[in-house]
Image (cartoon, rainbow, N blue to C red; front, side, top):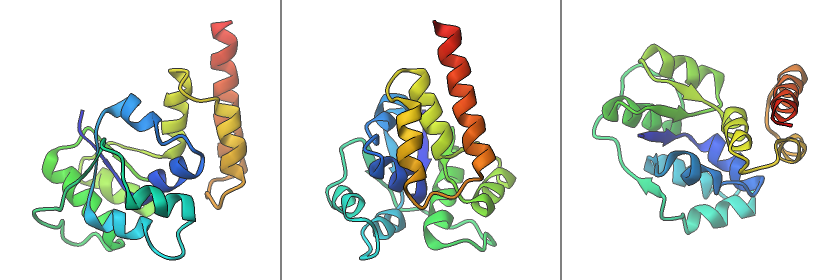
Amino acid sequence: MIVVSDTSPLNYLVLLDVAHVLPALFGEVIVPPAILVELTRAETPDPVRQWALQPPVWLRLQAPDSIVAGLDLDQGETEAISIAVALKADLLLIDDRKGRRAANLHGLTTIGTLTVLESAAKQELVSFPTAMEKLRSTNFRASRAMLDEALKRDLDRRQRRS
């Protein structure tokens, strides 16, 4: 499975201390250089910056061979979409709504941080309620309704297992 990631999902998964779910779910995750630059900026939370300065072996750095024209996104999103298009990636991990729309227009399948957490919870790699509690303490942007719906799906899933 070919998976490319934008900055946001990596940032939040590291902040929640659950980035270990990525190799468990996807094996290797590919990121362009701009993503590591974004993750190591001075304003980035220290745990994320430290993680990005010594990235795990499952995080593969790959520069795009070419850039998809006309995306009107930041450099990280542009490079991530460009790599995903070139590699015909199975998934692009991205939270930004505008970036997701652009990726979808280029035939990419996108998922965000919440879906990664839900997938990890289904495989019992994380406690979804605990992850959601931590996520709410960050600057993650999602409507309360979206977060509540995700919690309800997780509760329903756990009840069906019982």
